[in-house]
Image (cartoon, rainbow, N blue to C red; front, side, top):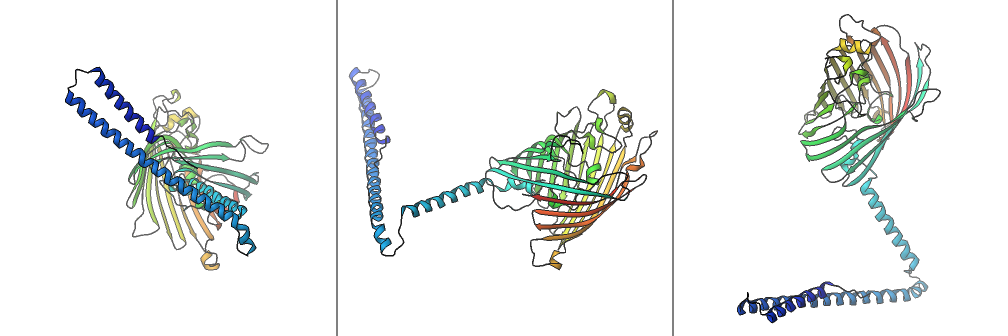
Length: 493
């Protein structure tokens, strides 16, 4: 097929118009120009016209060469089609139109798969990045565009001993979608949407579930050691609050210390910086704070605002620093803090600020199947008496908890042929008390002083799927709480 171009004629037209302009200028006898100037400009325009004509000639010759090549290829194709039946008769493989169509279809399928893989890679290295869980970190590994991941978990609980009329339960605990988008190498959107308890409607057996945005952040990646994050951010405390995907922690339930002392999952609106510098990683944000209206004898968990029309008359700061030395592979040592007022200038608290200070120290070590964790958290609340009076409950001015955990992957010892599978018995001891110390004149609730022993098995038939079985024994300083046996299942993708 012959192709035409408007570029060559366009140049010629412009040159002719320029020459016409010159002629008109001479005809009018423009007095401002001398004869020498007119002659010089005429020479320039003639040279320009010659360049334009030469360029048009070269472009025409190139188009003619393309046309001849196309005609030759067309004749060759027609000749091959005519000789195909004879080749088939002679026993050769014919290049039939159906065979050509099949190859075209295969090529189109491969191109489509390539496009899909660019947006959602079929495999991914599950590694935590910038404080997020491994599945939530997928967006940082794609070159551009959309990234989708997620996780889910369910649990069956059978109460045993000290049941006090409790019932066995089964729960589709949560299903989570991670949706990220990488606009450029340095601009990344990341989000987590969580569906809890299978439905947002109440049933005859339980209250309603919920749909929530767990985090929604925009990252500006400048340097490994200094980046900006803003949005609904996860408070960087403890092990579980940021990395709560079920495949990456032991037990069907999250540790109680990281639920009642550090109120996982805990997120607030804010902005800050994060990065990695050698063996150190850090995160530091300014956030909306808690609301003391939700504090109770059970702790600060009810004060989370979670980005839902949060009051911002009180602000907070939070930070975390972790150290992973090269000389001790598998070792992580770190700490974090949260400091902020909590009364939000609400009238019922008077002039009280309700300054909350929460600290955490944590250690993790992994080596040849051995997994060890230790975490301690301590909280201090100013104006606890004013808050207790306003809330008509005893809110502690000091609360704390800690846990120790050990696990060992025995699969290489008993079934070494299953290299990608994992089987680890584990044990965890916890002590936590949301009423460690209360203001004078108030009565401490001793049922909140609890020891918890958890033992069980964690089995991964695939690195992205986990099955969990455990037994939890609660020991309270006063009163009784039902022990339970739990079976859990979870996955990430």
